[in-house]
Length: 362
Ligand SMILES: *Cc1c(COP(=O)(O)O)cnc(C)c1O
Image (cartoon, rainbow, N blue to C red; front, side):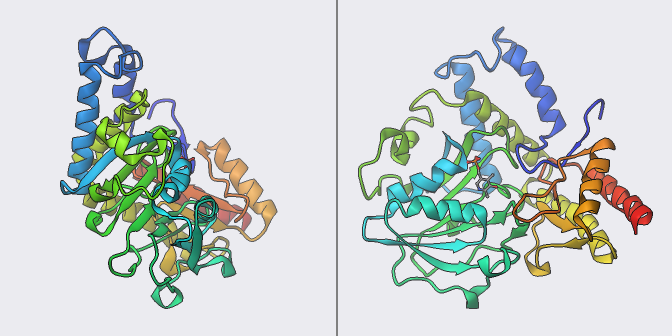
């Protein structure tokens, strides 16, 4: 692993080292063209190929039928918080949101600029430490769509499967922090969006998977850059796209395909998370903050008995090459983010470090 350290950052996050090595070469000279990937025209043949391959590999990976379009947009997941309601929430209409944390709340705030929001479920009553179940969820009569956040990056919770939205309703998912981490049935979704910087590539780029019949179902006039249809008909190149972002997610899609696809990722991710959760559960010093049935396989949130010990833990970890373990301020404590590309040996190293820390401070 040369001079690199273990990066537990919640995002931007660790990327596959093979992909980074390839990118290093392609930044200098892409496919022998004499021009680097950052310098090619986005309308040229070299970049056509990158877009075509990224799109095809994404379709293969997610098992997308022809009835879905893949878009590479900009502005991160946060732009989708607004773009979704701008397109699909009519004035006077209601969209249902499952409120499972800070990112859901931000999505809700944007939707309220356009129409009504019904919070069909919320775990705010216990600082978002769990995923509401079906009995705790009540949908409105005819929601324009149902929105949920599949993995709650800050609170360390994750939906086990997608919620059962009322039949016929359009399910919209912010999948930023667990996209491509496990198999899914894409046909259950109307729109999936994900900022790339957790599981897929560089920040700024946004993957959007959208059912084609929704592309031109906008309920109002929106600015050009907010039109899904326009992006689709221009092959995600209506304006100058984030070419390097698409290049990177394309390489990462390929890396996932070569590593056993989504089921390969799911197995690897489950084993990684189990190592750490098992240690926490057996520990008399550390404890998890998410309810056991709602635990995330991507972001493991945990605490130590005192805040002083937590500070000490984070500082000592940092000095031993375990970086980015500080929890979000709304939860406190620690958070180990172990997305797709985070190596299993890094999880073993964290457990070893926790053991030593506990024996020295227990
Ligand atoms: C990181 C994150 C976001 C924000 O993504 P940006 O690309 O910064 O807009 C939104 N939702 C979830 C679940 C996230 O983890």
